[in-house]
Length: 64
Image (spheres, rainbow, N blue to C red):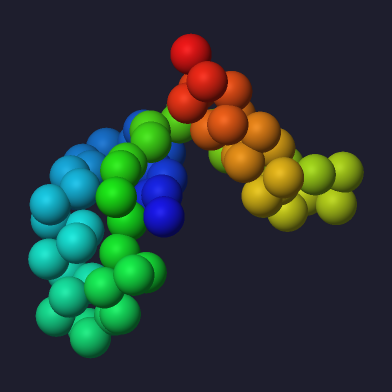
């Protein structure tokens, strides 16, 4: 599981995010294992965040 963050102002680190989610009783398998910071989220032609492109970016990054 990944947590994505846009670089704008103050950000939370991975440890802080996990701690926050644990206080809200999120299942352990749903907790992020890593954090990726992006300048902008990729959007589809409909103006929504493209999960497909995000997945492709991470797959390409992990192959390096």
